[in-house]
Length: 469
Image (cartoon, rainbow, N blue to C red; front, top):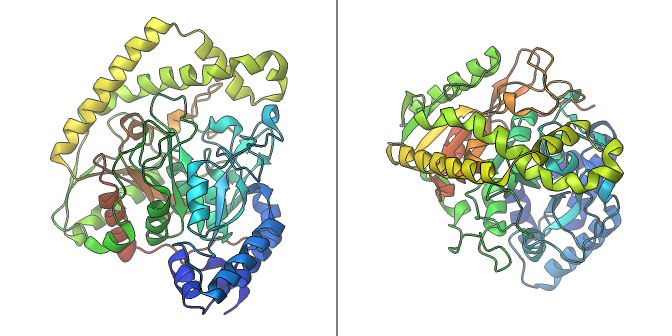
């Protein structure tokens, strides 16, 4: 087996071979680090890489295998952590010059769980400043490039994680999603990403976004995501919003299929503008679910019309907490973020509370609607990757901070907390990936994984690799 083969190996296979003493954690980690050394200069997926620490972990993992010590689910498997999550042995800089060099004194629960399962942490992946936008650029790290096209957007706050997954920088990548930041980069980079039900994976410290921030996996396969989510999920006392119940056995139950499922497909949610190539690929993908034994019907959900006004009010409101940084740092912060924060400062508390009432009615309407449907399919994002120095594609309307205009499909399910995933469903004529979003009922994370796995089985994507060389 070549070094290149090891770098692209699935986590499920890797963990199994290591457990059976047929694969060395040292060999695996060295192979992945070698690929990162060769290609990351072009991609810029990492803000902090820790090769020496990773190799030390790998040698310890190999020794544990040799001595017959108990092995965790992810023993010897490389993983990356997003730079909005606390790590006690690596800085957490949040894509911002204002927090450059900040060193937490403890690991977030998700990091603790990955380490306890035996995963080897390679480093921290890049994010836009405080994760505020859907474009892979920050004042701290510059552009994170789409592996399929240098200079193109890799998408949203988990961009480094998705770019790393697509580039073969290991199999497992932790992402976060406050308005689409797992699913959007999965769409742009041609990988799988899942935002589980709100609270399924504990988020510590609890994010100040009115119950919209989620943590989840970004991988090259659904099975790897199921394995990673199994490790990360479960209640935690430091997150009062975390789901009390333990996660289901996602890997063991992944192959259940979706025969008989009632699936709604909405090409635009009744209001979203969508580029023609994206719309065509998403529509074709939705039809393939009929071959899986599901009933698919095109719909326009009545609840969806209120989404644009809600998000354009709530997004700057929740970012206004960064206003205290402006007097000292404004000239060195992302100008779009500054404009968004300034709009948020002007929001009155009474207006915010009234909009929250509307949000909760919107969520209730969604959940009532899902009583008639098992899944909703939409495009993941309205556009393929565009130049990463732009906030909007050139052919779209321009605005000082509103990138949401081309991302109308993802945030509704952050507001409601429903599980949602992006599966690769094809390429544009220019060779850029496009994703299909699968949304499920609240708490039906297993159902979303099953639907994604069923689609993957008839339209596989993991063998498609960007031409980084």
